[in-house]
Length: 100
Image (cartoon, rainbow, N blue to C red):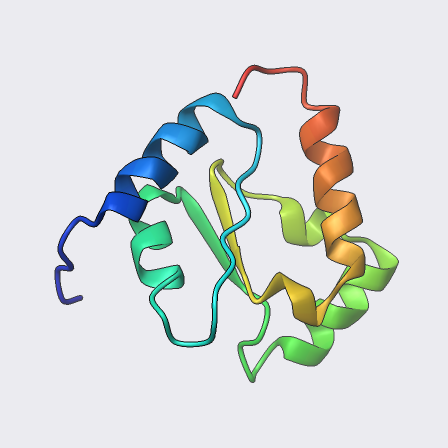
């Protein structure tokens, strides 16, 4: 993978991840949200992967904990495709019982 330069936003993301249970990165398509986030993630889920998108949407409705499983911080790319996943994620973070 091509190395990217550290940006001010990347340093802010790193700081927020140390003190928060979750960080939401918002912005227009293709502005560079996922690439820098991958540097800080210990696990990754691409919701919109064409091979898995239908399965991921169904799992988000039926048993979102399967999609949330993984080392933290966990990057969930394109979570908005499966909006029920957001509430499950917030619940998980709130009940994790750990700092940050």
